[in-house]
Image (tube, rainbow, N blue to C red; front, top):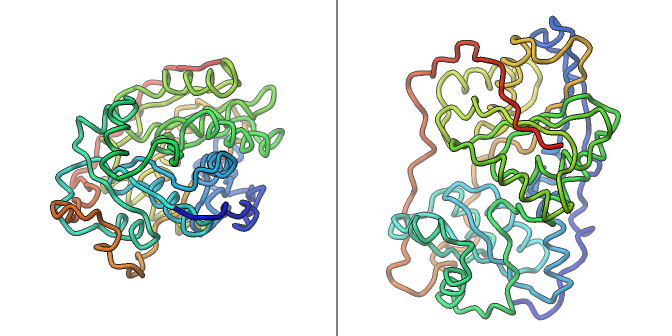
Length: 355
């Protein structure tokens, strides 16, 4: 634990507001739609996009409370874990990451987790049943005890940074886009970004979310986040669940080829697990006539593809717990399907809007 409070977040020099850039693309212009890219990936090189927006208010709260250890949750390739670990290194917080999948504990660290360890994050692996119960106070108490931590010394950030503070931080994204677009699209993992984005928009604007996970659980989660953050429904939003491509981490050849073509066309590195699915979904909706001619459509670029991970400056073993069973191993790479899914033009999406 650090002995002095972390410096202010201004020390990270975020680029705010993030740029909004027009993108000429005939897949949209032939329908009379103007496409814009909201480049949240340029906010900060290590805490890009929605990771900055959701983490920043939580980091301020942790510092104000005198909690200089952050504990959070994520999967083996979690962008949120990496952003939290980077924030800890940059601001002087100690960090602990609770990773889904006890089976990973006796394998070498994959590149994503190795980066977390290099940034000083202590990694704790739990089985999937325990992970699903991570919000249970008894489970959290057991995790803290196992890590040798006292509850009063730790600030807990939920998976993805999606809590009331995180949603409030994402409301700034909506405010930055007031008057600039009619529909604002974003990929959804835990739903916190969409919850805040919609709340920050102005009259006549709406947010459109593209879940990257299967399950259809995002609607209730977003409504709950808005109740916690804004005391009730806030803004106009809807979801289209058709473009998860089989679930999180699934990058079939169809999606990969689409992302490569978009990169060449616009000179924009396209992150595959979130951004590519959102952009692909928008092209389908444009062909379906969902957006009337004259629509100004803004796509939020929440992150960029990971560069080749650096060699850890701290050996992963130094970030591991002393338990001899806590040696880890590469989780399987995100699955890539060999056969592309059949995406015949689907029925127009059913709205799960909250107003």
